[in-house]
Image: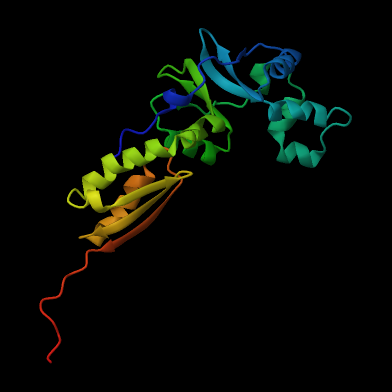
Length: 225
């Protein structure tokens, strides 16, 4: 079977740029500029994550600097109107923070990012204490895995598992993460299973099954001459 998938702790950044909830507006901007980040966890106490402050949270202050929000904007964007007048991280931050645990799979983390429309996730323990941060770029690191490593795992954990009697006759090729299988097998109903298992292998971009059923030899000849 495919090996255990990578989890968040395998790719997350452990040294995190963060601010306290009392951090002033200008300190937040300065920190983002100096550390080249676009968002930071907001902490309280000994490191408990209570929110996230991002560039998007800071922009309303500039947007409404010359003219205040219109009545329509006040109704449609109440949170941005509040942020326009905020001066500390605690008032600016998005809360509650969208977080993930270190033992979540990369697929689970990617799903959270997609559903919640965020670019990064603070990694926390059961007490919401900060452990690291994982970004979209971190999740994509699995696709840097060498084709040779992917091929070896596919042979060892999928082909040998599903087709033990035919594994020697199945050709596995991996190019730029796309796995191609060629050969003859006895039970073609296992092809969809093989595709599903191969897609679960870390670093696989796509699967192209070119497996055919084992030909059945004819018994005797049809020549009546």
